[in-house]
Length: 100
Image (cartoon, rainbow, N blue to C red):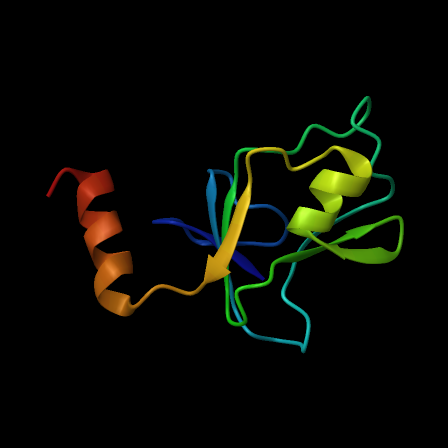
């Protein structure tokens, strides 16, 4: 399950550039596509925050980290992966988004 910053949980994707992954498995899987062809799949400019700080995606059944997807498939360009921020940081981001 993914959560976009300041949004309800969504089954797939985040709906905005920031994505938090709730720990459910040993892998920090942030998405899955049937193929990682940049002519077909437009992914990039995302910030993924996961329990282990190593966002992984499934490309045609092959699990690759975000840096591997960038190097091997030329997708997720401009995307980053990092550990889950503290609650205080997430709350500060939400307040900023809400103009509070």
